Length: 222
Image (cartoon, rainbow, N blue to C red):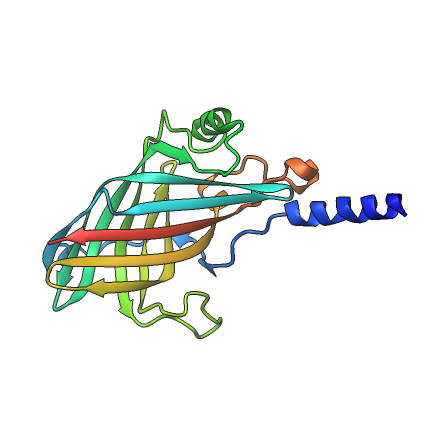
């Protein structure tokens, strides 16, 4: 009887430990899009609030997950007729901070993520996202949105490790005369930016899922 209870306990622990990527809206990475130069001169500039804006990421593997953040280095949005018409944000890769509940190994993990195995921060110290299109409403043609209160679809060029891909995701955007806020929660496939370490399923419990969850909170003030 004790062996049965122990076996059940181990099984429960195993399934509890197994981590799936957080449920979020998925995005396909395609070829980078050209930014319309005429859009760059339209609208009033709202400068990013570096202290209020945040980028959080979650990576998962069969036996756990890791969470972290990046700090915004610079950024701005253009607003015309109460609509976002463009903008660009730059993120400091070396600002990477691990926020796991279990802090054991945090320093080692950060060093590994900044190494050439992942972000190669020495060679590519910045990442950026430049908006190429913003449309009102969210694309629900082929899927049910996880972010139910999304108000817009944002398309832009995401650059990581010197590789630029276009992505689109639903976002909740609020524009006032004083500021703009935008929130999004979506998943990307890291391998499309050559972040391929640990992607081979034959690695077993050392396997790291290619899907990474990104939670954005952007604030820009007039």
